Image (cartoon, rainbow, N blue to C red; front, side):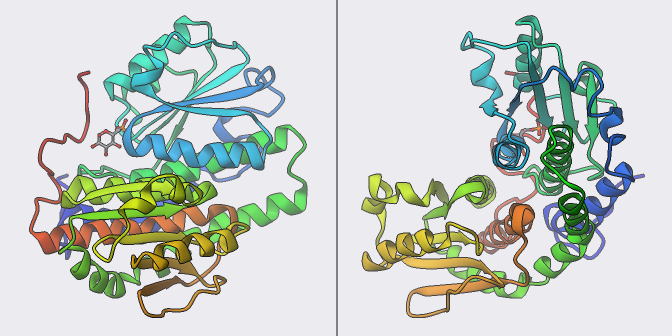
Length: 367
Ligand code: G6P
């Protein structure tokens, strides 16, 4: 059946609002998170000999991989590399057969990701997992393990619900690795599962921030540049926020890990440069606050996505939208949602073709 827009103006908006459902369906498909996840027990081949993870992907899927790297290393203690597929396939990498190669793709047909997968296989890395939204895709056929996200058909060129459901799959993978390596005791597992089960409701309360984000978008629509800052596992979320904004509103946006600010981008900061800051109340928040002061001292306007625990208040030049909860390890899944909405409403305010941005394709099946 044709996918209907319903009450929404664009598919992208519909897909943003569908995320609680998409995440719930993705979790439900797993049913029980234990040895059965991905159809294999932690002590079974091919999980056994695995010493590291290599993630290959493009675009938004690549940023999902960048978040997963933080999880895999800090929670499961598995060394992890993430690489843009179009680079990996040509760089003649040094490889290790004790690697699980994870390809992440909404479509399962992206030419560079497929070629990178085949390159990895030809270099002897035959243990492969696809995190993919299309069960009948080439990538699913060509990998030994699969995690199918249940986002449903994604029509907007700018990926939204595919991204957040990929993150759910990658977090489950992290839990499985952690369990297999004795890094997840029963209490920690129960805690992680509880947070996952509550995630659809948590995302629902974030999309409800839309009216506040629309007010910001009206200001962004008049800008030509924007800078996004994040730290730790929210640095890839800042990258994704900048990508969303440039893809659909055509505003030049770039993202930096906030600690790099004084190594270049601070030179760009003036009153004309909005600086979006992803600011959950995590271990890095105090360092982030001093990065924000550096921006304010140069007259930059800060647009801060804080959470329930972040001690930052609105003041002259500092605008704050507060996410209702602090969400620990799963916080990137919540923090990307207001960035999707900010890009969406900025683009609609500028009158661009949100679902089909110029020069871009939903699925890039040629090199
Ligand atoms: C294109 C799309 C992006 C997507 C990327 C990777 O650039 O416009 O939204 O993130 O391809 O696509 P994939 O299907 O492999 O996730």
